[in-house]
Length: 494
Image (cartoon, rainbow, N blue to C red; front, top):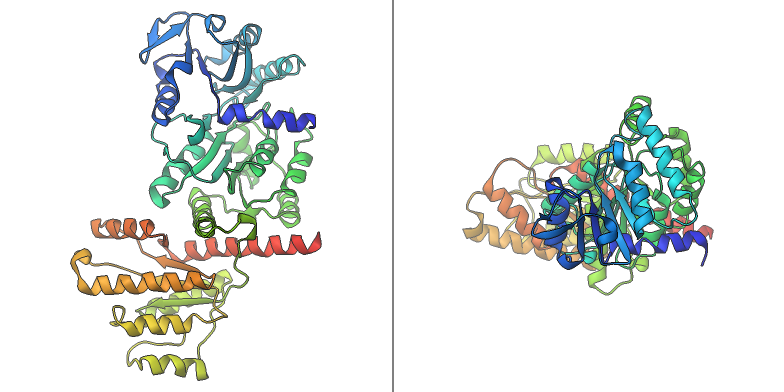
């Protein structure tokens, strides 16, 4: 095993530590302790260090790291002021073997010249061959790993999933986990906020996730490269070329003004857009528009799509991704149908027109007098009928890749016979679409309404893919299509 692979394997200690220490523990460390407590981490293996405290959170507080009854600490979190950071690290490394270390402290390279000097001193300490510790940060929130029973907030879900996160922003990392769970019921395998990347690099975590059996989808928020690692750009490209899993890649600092903001956030160095355009062309990674909603939408469709096939026992490397962009839209409004056609066509989806024999086949099932069967299927008043189901199934022919249904509910929908028949229809449409290895997306426009919230929760529970707007649905599907196209192309060229 090469040196770099040994270093990457050490990340097991980061995501599944057996012992955790908090250096500089205080009442402000409550979110770290609460996160581990709710995830079920063994409290007997959590060690708090602060010479001026006796007890915190019901645990004994040790005066010094050397007083802890462990020879090695798998993961240490340091939460002291930046003025004491360098001396604190020297003390830590002189007293215990530390496998991984999280520098929570901010105000370093991203803040001012003094902070830059502090980071240089940290790097000098790490360059000592005797120190084998892997470090995340400075200026980062930390680690989330349900199977490792570790989190830095108690509000994170306890149930593990298969999404891996690598973020250079702790706040975005936090919001993605919380919003993704609340909005789309997403579950995660592992996540790490890596901050200013003085030591651990994005390429290394990508390589780790690429070989992690618990991770099927990887989402990255990237701001730039650390000046301490001039070869990271080359390593990152090399790693991205080897990825066996979908990598959804969002960059911060795409504009010149944005790069200025990056320098005051993580102190990293961005690169020109034309270089990144080449990276996207040479790899299977998917470029995500730079917004939290966009990366959530993209993760959601990959997560739902991949898990659908995993439940069928299909290997993730053999999943049949969409090979075309032909779209069928089902709704009950002519005006919305026109807008949907314009919107989807402008975004790059295709909407084949049903005419001739294809149209007559649909009309024989139900000769509607109001609406249209040409695509969109504009079928007002019949959504609870058997004809609605039969027309929909007949229209989902071999040349349709994506089916979009606009849906809605009234305030008393759960007691309505009409709704129950309609819901049975869309569930059967879902079964039919998935039996043909196609994709079904529902559009449920959002506004404050308890009934819509209840309906949305029902749809998510039953495995429907639901987006609030057509553009969100279309862009997410196109990302899925693009990934399928890329992996097919790369396999042919190997």
